[in-house]
Length: 376
Image 1 (cartoon, rainbow, N blue to C red):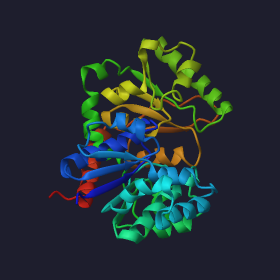
Image 2: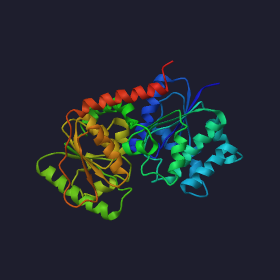
Image 3: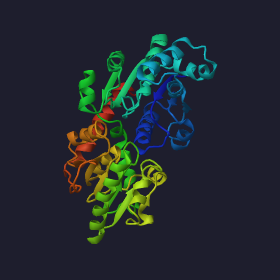
Image 4: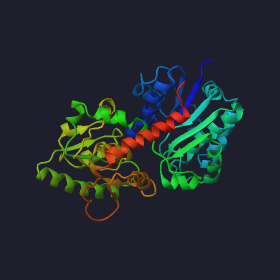
């Protein structure tokens, strides 16, 4: 019988960072486990099928656990936890059983990284509940890597107890590490960082890499904060243009990130807007010497690793500040600014040594991955 590795991730929405996490693991598994069946359980398997086509030769898509969470009658953390546990443990649900049989036959169930199992989305704790239930039934390995767990959900103690049964677990920030009693680890994108940096060096991507780059979200904030931030960014862009610098804009989540580009009212030329599909197909337009202003976490990581300076903009307290701080702790040298703060945005900063450090961190992440899936 073919071995099954069952990945659980927030992929397919799409979102540059979440998709890059999935792609990084799929590329790694294509090298070390090309002959196993890899199942990806994600919210949008249809879109994921297009995004990840051809990366692993035996990739299959499902949304069994995500659907189980979404359809729980009670959407509190505890309510979803109990519902998914029943669905996986007891079966008897024709709408789920065919897909959940694969979960029950898996040798490894791996919760991929990202900040999606926490108090921001309390229903997502059901993913962990389902993994735990499957392991009780078949004794499979449970893995978690590069997770961001803050702010903690209401059932934090239950979640911590569940993670204590995992065969291996890593988190990407100090707060998450303290909450569950492990050492801080690394975000999963470090696994694929060398590949992503290599893509960015192509001529087509470098042509899109302007002197000043923006990547700003409109989700997970309020209109007042969004408007305040747009006024601050207008000052930044006008100053850059006045100094003869080129300005570009990146879309990490389609639509959501376009709103700030539009709010700037034509200050940035349309031809300098880089839509998500171009970023995904070709790479992030980064290079040394750039200045970045981004609320998105993974553009902060990749741009800093390329040698760019930047300002990491916190769009949501107790969530995005934690994410960006994890990169500041690793030494990007960027400046953090809350979108809600009064006053102008600070000047971009950076650390010239982080590009080399980032490759060392990528090696460390690969060592972690190889410990979970050693070559055969």
